[in-house]
Image 1 (tube, rainbow, N blue to C red):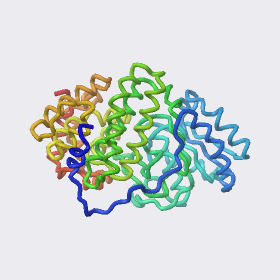
Image 2 (cartoon, one colour):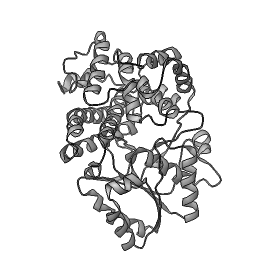
Image 3 (cartoon, helix red, strand yellow):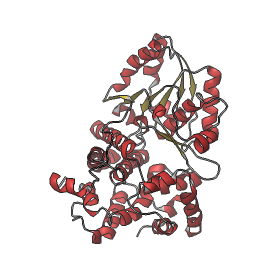
Image 4 (cartoon, rainbow, N blue to C red):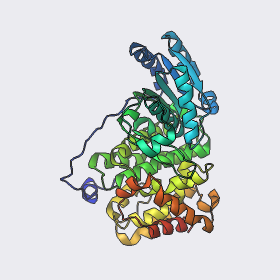
Length: 409
């Protein structure tokens, strides 16, 4: 940081708004070897009579991370019966969430264990809520209930350094109409989370970069919402500093455990930050992208549109934005007139670390902009994010951002 006094001033906070410094969140075990804490967690589950668990993962994660050698004996030694669902897909749909819930209901599940990243947690959280809402479907949850007060217990083993969902109270799923609505509530916090950086060593290069950038966007958005506070903003600033330092290292040295350690730590900080202060434009506008093109990785979609969004929000928070981006663009002075410069420099940094994609690279053309705008403006998820955006959101603004994000400027 360039100076704490200047940083405090740049936040421009409402000093009369009361906030909760540390909301409820899971007991989180962090560090190399944290996976071994599954023994203690299994004992706790048994003591609470949560002795029938559905493991939610996908075949690649399960095989590559080799978590079975820890989970299986922990469950067997504590007489915990388990079943496995290993077909989690990126951008889970209502149907895939219903499938897991129906399987868990038939099994008589008393708890869930999510092994993976954001999609695994989204699927698990949705299914956990459905088991406490008999007769409801995922569509009902996302389009009628939304705020969730009851779900069966969840344990989350994180295998990426980007999601943050293992420490937050949110879940998203994809509708048939190209939307990704949100559910939220205290029941969706996992009971326990395991953050073991060694589990990320098998992440492919593109996932290493894209998940890290997802955490970057969580951080920047949470630090610039209308409901930000000093605690969440300082968490975000620390996360951005760590990501900017270590993602270039991890991209070229996949076995560098130090880089993996700090990227996972940054992801946790970012997850806590946006759990407190929410997100705004970048996530609201990305969800139509990955909903209309499920092959578009979430972190890459966010990165494709962030420079154009920064051009807009920088003018509202120039000092704060300059402070947050100082580890990446140290020459920024924090004045509104450098917004376009900041846009071009952050776009170049994304390309330099291995994420040059814009919307055209993700399969979108000028003719798709109207559909992207329509979905962004009408998605059930957009309103709460637009409400905390640092700028007033209009259809024209959203159209400009999508158009500006089609290709590199």
